[in-house]
Image 1 (cartoon, helix red, strand yellow):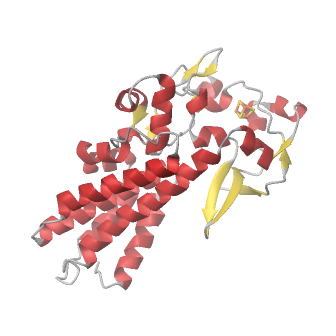
Image 2 (tube, helix red, strand yellow):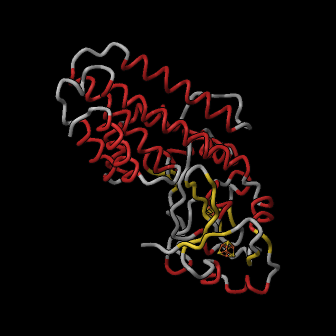
Length: 289
Ligand code: SF4
Ligand code: SF4
């Protein structure tokens, strides 16, 4: 199991970055839909163009297909040699937080770093000679606030999508009919590779998830994510509102749960743990496996 070091907001660490760009190589940078918009604006191209050129799995992860650099690893697609990040002002939360991570446990936010040794020391040992600062000062300097709010709002949106899957299974007579295939598929999707889950979801729903047609409120992640939520709820109503057969209800419940799990990965949650949690909840309400 991965060791993590939990931090208090007043803990002082060597958090002044030496800007060598080592951490822009060989990392996984995940994205929520609002972060994708921020990156595209900074790059001065459309969100769709940014998604198609620079992202993987329908837009939930930045490509790392740049020049080979630190430790023989490929650079982020946004990294420019001898310059740094080409989308600095629009960079996503995980880049703003690095080397810290953010965890939510029982609705409480914690900041952490992975391992027991401060991560920057491996690639940039010179940080220990630079000014130390508190975790709180670091977060302020990186302007994480809006990005953290976006993350939290998309966590709500993810739960709302999962709720649609629950309704389709539990409130339509599907579970009562003795269906035992739907939960099996929820579990399977929780274990699927992101490319497999993206294929399963298909382009249409990947686009609803990552390219919402919202042209205002781009500065305000909370309104943006809430509008996005409304659009997805309307789309679900339009597509699933008049389903008749158990097979159609099963397919719809699986599809929308797949979308929730794909978003979960994009916001750094663990799809496998979430799928198990949602399966347990559905069983408590009478669903069978
Ligand atoms: S590893 Fe740390 S010090 Fe080095 S470039 Fe990344 S954030 Fe900065
Ligand atoms: S988006 Fe910018 S800061 Fe983040 S990994 Fe890519 S180059 Fe580095």
